[in-house]
Image 1 (spheres, one colour):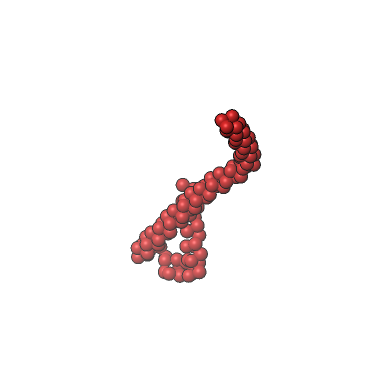
Image 2: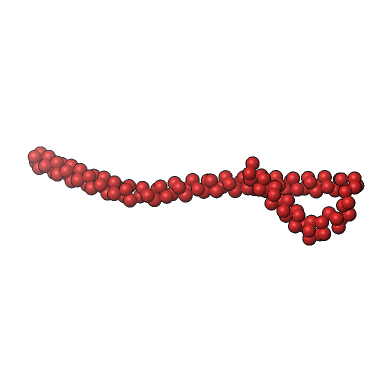
Length: 115
């Protein structure tokens, strides 16, 4: 809801700048009579459409920011876990090597006994 309000205010500010650069409603002959009603309705529709587009863009950007924040957090967690995982991997490699040496020695001893 706040994103829509901000987008609407932004669209209104842009339109006000356009009106000011063109001389405003008074320069277009708007003195409050009923003949200007259709043009005001059309302008209102344009502003509403612009505000809706901006609100949609803002919501899309908010979702993208949230997604990127989650990905950054996951990457930071992975980076923090890396040293621990590296040490754990090294310990497992040392144990595996010791196990392989033991098996090799046992196989060698069996072969010697069989011969």
